[in-house]
Length: 319
Image (cartoon, rainbow, N blue to C red; front, side, top):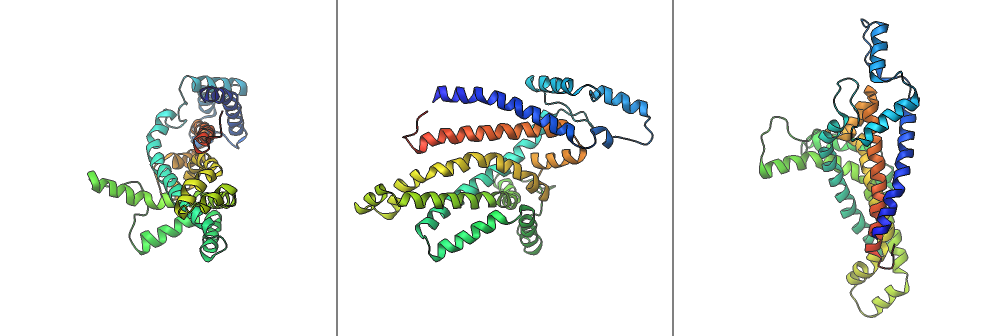
């Protein structure tokens, strides 16, 4: 396993280089440039040219890429064009809020999705299975912005149970359990909106995998020995059905971070997603490129985590 992990980490180096080149190229192909958001009618053309020169925008593309990737390797993600704030510091300030949101959504997705998938498989072609199938299709199909606005309208505006936006109550000086409940009330709606598609996907994958395993000979043997249904389903069938689900487990991490862009914007959540939206509008290229690299690393880390979990779920798998 150790050799396998080292090999995978070495393989990720050229992949990251390719991703960095693509990210840089896409940003260069985007219409306009960061200077267009800074233009003041009173600024002369000479001052604009001087600002572009100071920012390195007049250098050739290979030179710009080399300067950028050199700073990345030194741990410097660059500086925002408008304020000059370090991009790394800006991301670290937003990271805890995004981790709270995506972590909550991740737990909701698998705590709800896996049991519903198992239950749907054990009730195959019966009413509960049909109901859960329809619900899963709705969960996959419904746009997150529509679902989020609907939840705000019902639970915040009509019922008044939950706050409409933000991470904490402004002006409140909560501590201890009261602070925890305040966080919980603010995170529950965006977390449910973010988790809904993953819940549906996990449920469908778990159901199909369980149906395949339940038809195998060792399950019939365990059942014929008089073992309880719960033991047959949970101990023998579920563990063997987890392989496809583990793939979703690994890939859902970057998926949730990507989905946080829309969800955080809807709920005004102060995380990396809302930072990404603001950076796109402001054409803060250093921030956008840093966020793209961060998401790419998450994708590779999710794949590696899934491979490691395969060996845990199925002892027959060895690297």
